[in-house]
Length: 53
Image: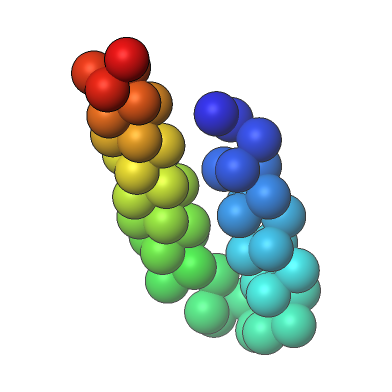
């Protein structure tokens, strides 16, 4: 479950390196949102699979 959020963090870290430090603050907010969305999606998928069985 944490593997996906790590992948996103790494992707955003690479993006952050490509941009100025002034964009850094915006990326931190975006990073948090992305990780929240992915975690929610994974959680709903897991609970969906559990309810199917």
